[in-house]
Image 1 (cartoon, rainbow, N blue to C red):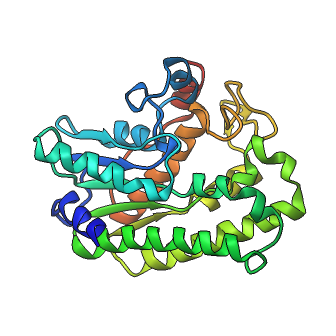
Image 2 (image 1 turned 60 degrees about the vertical axis):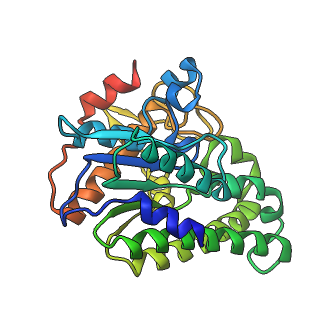
Length: 282
């Protein structure tokens, strides 16, 4: 129950409109791309700004602030520690009350159970079903606690991406990949259902976005974005075996911007092809 109390303190009342006055993000390495979150400088340059940081740069006002508590390697059970860091900052008056929250987790939970998920679809392994049931329960608690306690707060909830698309998982193969995808979809269906009950929760379907980009790679300044198995080059979607590159992250940022504009009727500018090209070649 304490997590609900923590979330109650976490998110401040918000006017009906979208506000980035105090943006707070929680998650794993997908949203922890800077040296501030402990990433070595050379890798930070390779990955660029994480998607939420890129969105914030486009949406921010002169007094808006972003504070990132995401931590590389974090699993869903570790998210409360990030909340605790935020609450301590609030107590010490080192962080203002949040007006926008990005909640992203679950990918590392999937990676840790990848071997067992490959062996069969949901229902095949009692062990993996129980682990994913626990993941679903944690995420439901986080989402429901935030959404219901603070109905005027904007909470961006990310689904878990299809990690079988990543370069480091191309060895999995189609049959075993189908099993893994079925497990990911089961978790994401539960996330979508929970998010659907709460009007103040905005769902970012990262699983669908990754699949869309894989199926039809964007063309930037006349050049098609390279998808797996390619990685690590300036025009690749992935920087390494698992994480999006600077190019990939800004493409994801545009999807978030489009989603928020549609949901709230705002006009946050997307990154242009020229801006994307410049970011990719830095």
